[in-house]
Image 1 (cartoon, rainbow, N blue to C red):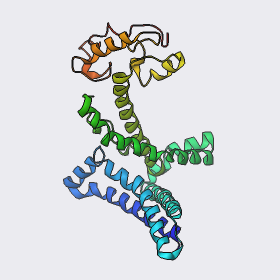
Image 2 (cartoon, one colour):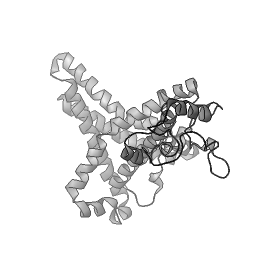
Image 3 (tube, rainbow, N blue to C red):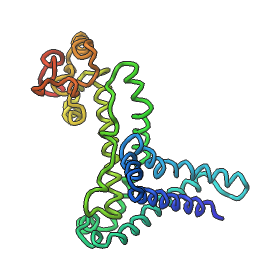
Image 4 (cartoon, rainbow, N blue to C red):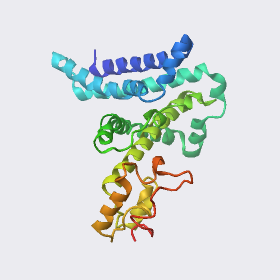
Length: 286
């Protein structure tokens, strides 16, 4: 059988089987609901994420290479293409089935119909699948959160996090989200949490090792959204290394290693402890 079609068929069937099992869990009583709830939050959420996103991308090339090595003409890249096609097919078929199972919601107000009308059907759908191409990036970020950041907590005391408070999915509970709308909203649900946790971890990294503002004032202005310490906390770009080391002493010598706006540094009045010293005020990049 053709390597591409076989990889596609196996992955598509696996996606549909996995989705079916997730739908079955709530029907298995309190145990099933407990397992389902656990799979909606990190770290157990990582299991279905890996199953649906990363595992097919490993299976495809391995299968293609193995099939080719057996003399039947397969190649790793052919297996990968088949696996991706299987993922896409599985998502689309599941979407159709879920919409058929929820006819009232299917006929009601829909995100997909509204955006199809606003930007055009093909442009809307093409753009969605373009966003899916960055899924491996988010998987890598998530791997770094699980395997790399904890070492920073161990070695230099950067704050630890209950990752399930950031990386979780819950939009399946929103009334009226079905099929196409639901799967893409769950995708956004997951990647928003992953990105937010990653940004929080980077805030600790940046303020701990490099609390110096950028000379480019526009960069400071743009970065302050994700790195609030850049404004009024980090040392001015025309400052001195003495100011930098003094800031590090002020912020970290007491044992708190969170970024300067971290919750553990806030008083009951919402102000940072010891915020009057260090980088000084002024315009970003001044």
